[in-house]
Image 1 (cartoon, rainbow, N blue to C red):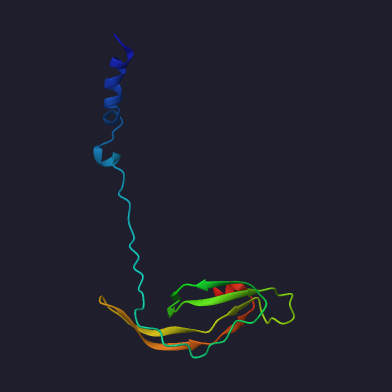
Image 2: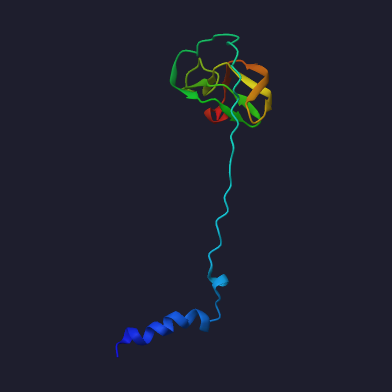
Length: 130
């Protein structure tokens, strides 16, 4: 008689011999989390001022429109500077942009009810802009 024919009944009966029932052998279902991101659909007002970034930047990047804490901000630009230069007042310049501090959210749309102008300004470190 072949060995696998002798071992097959033992393998098949092992869960019952060890006291496992089908319920104990089931893998628990994975829990899922759904995240919903609200987007402000109200048109952003025209800029209050147009100030060119200070000269001498090393690089610039665009920060996409989105949420920062509970405030929605429109897209804006941040430029990084060499802090060894005597003409700069920080590591980065944040361009002026609008922020929405009050809004209504419903299933149809999300509207800003209070736009606040954030003037262009220096920040000590680039991480303060993120």
